[in-house]
Amino acid sequence: MSVLAALVLVAGCGGGGSQVDCGLDGCTITFPRSGDVAVSVLGVEARLVGVQDSTAQLEVAGQQITVPVGGETEAGGFMVGVERVTDAEVVVRVRA
Image (cartoon, rainbow, N blue to C red; front, side, top):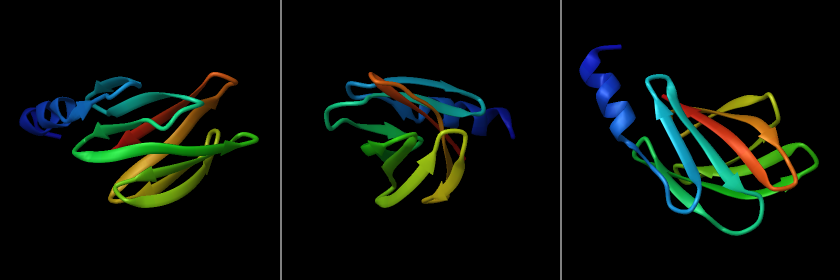
């Protein structure tokens, strides 16, 4: 990855009520488990739709996906993984 591409990747992260932490390898989003919060990450919108057991339902770039803790799937050209689910929060990793 070029330095310019890395800077664009880092600059493309932003939060709206959730905690968003971006680095050269993608963004980590900490969603509150309750509430309807969407964030802009890497130029696309990401939103937690719901949680059942240890599986999160997310909407990324307009595409709904279901990802278990420790799992990863593709959505809108991005790889989306769920790092952990607690009673209070859901931590999601998005990378290009």
